[in-house]
Length: 204
Image (cartoon, rainbow, N blue to C red; front, side, top):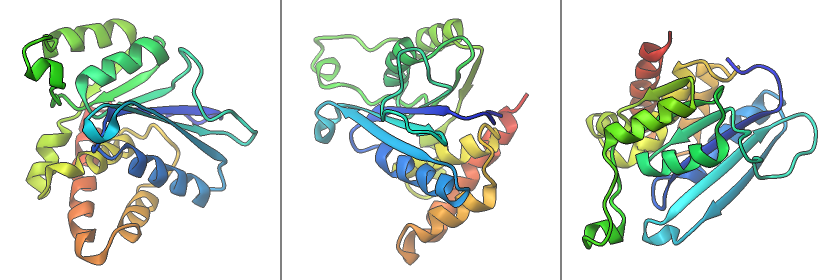
């Protein structure tokens, strides 16, 4: 568990995967615990599936919104190649990485102009850079819960299940449930619980 502030959490994905939603949920949980938080975001052509990186920094003192080079404590990857790109820039050997192995194929790859790396190669490079790497089948678990778009909520559940932050499970669930329309609450709760269980199973 990362218990000493500041704590830097980086979310790497592509447009449409819900980076900002998770950033806001994490910020809401932090504020319930009276922990200061600042959010920053960098993105490409997010509406067309371009890269999106969200920075969440927990601290009781003022900080800039972007995590410095090699200073991420936790990287949450919604997409494997974007996880690797983020790790190359922001991780160090003590960084904990969670990543969803389901790729979102870039346009140039779909057109045959570039080649997407093999998942095994991505996993090997992530492992060479970081001591703790956890593969979370977020897209698969979200689909079983009822909607693959909820992979972001699954990843949030996995983060909680791994006990990487000193926030209570009940606070996460309450924040998620209260943040969506009533008809989606049970679906979101199921997605979170699926991720939470996988996170618990990945604990050493």
